[in-house]
Length: 69
Image (cartoon, rainbow, N blue to C red; front, top):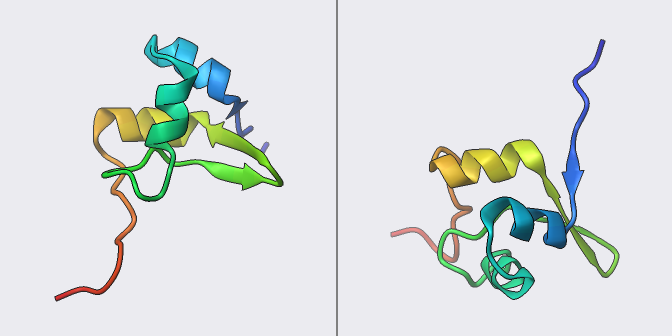
């Protein structure tokens, strides 16, 4: 049996972290330092619970930006 993926809305992530929805949107922007992993579905933003939990635990690395030295 395949593992199920739990998808969260920004409101659900905000509730999980006990922060505002605006904070979730700001942290999910690519320009943010260590952005919260998000998936764009058209104009909507969705989060995979496993990735959010790994990000919170500090085990999910932020994607590299720009050139490497």
